[in-house]
Image 1 (cartoon, helix red, strand yellow):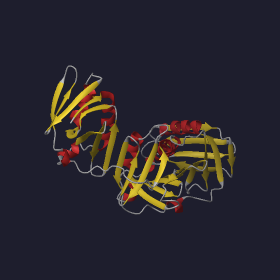
Image 2 (cartoon, one colour):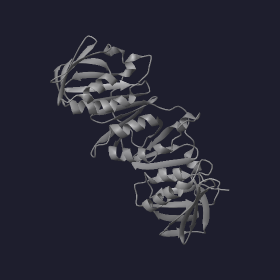
Image 3 (cartoon, helix red, strand yellow):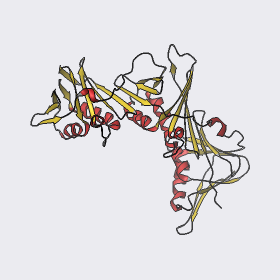
Image 4 (tube, helix red, strand yellow):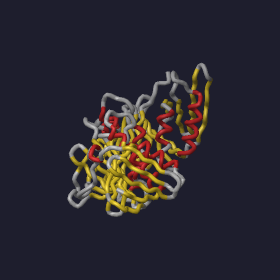
Length: 369
């Protein structure tokens, strides 16, 4: 293999595939990135056996087709520190030479066949979705997944499609985030229904891989895997095993108290009220009424805080209810709307934050006694 590659494009591609490179492993190939040069393009591949990534760049001149398997950290360091606009990469046997105008590196690698298979996207997609819409769905839910839990199903995010409607849901048992969007079903899929639990690691990588304003992402669920692809990248992930909780059962439908709030003002008030909370007193009291909203917090060893917020619209009886301020702030960061509605039933019942029909967030209250 011999290629002359745009250094900036190579650095960008390496940054994308490095998310699945294993730093410490008894299998040296998993710490490597595979380079494949053919058809006027260079494809970089890597896998950790759970998630695989392929990134293709055409900003390259392929002088000799071929492939090489190179330690990712060494290749990334060399390309990142180089000051050249282009780099020449030539491999022979298990060694790869990287040359700039005033530098030459020879890096020992491994036989390319030692890297486990990194799937490419072939065949028809189950559905397609605009990258910007996929970004929104992931960003509005991924934060609510369980970080460490023996119930592995809630360590991932549920992706549920019926026809052209897509629901993405995440929960950690104390809160639940659901975002809705539209997609285009594949020709053979029609109104078919599919669901899969996708690991958070894969979804985090999707936020980096796909993001062009006009980019369309193809998606296919096959056996125990899900594949996402654009013209430049393919991500394949194993699915999380288990059954996702029946999330529709935990969404309250009887809230008779509703407040409409300006998102930025509410978020600021929550952050300020949280300044005087501690590990022992992590809740913030929220007193809603027709006169407005008062947030208060108290920590015996620190002091107390009170913040008042204007409420443009409130219906129902006054209510005092406590919430973990971090949980509230997490949702307000991603709603992407100027106003939110907050619905309640009672101080010991969950609250719901909504923005229109596309985002819903259920949050359990905390006991402030």
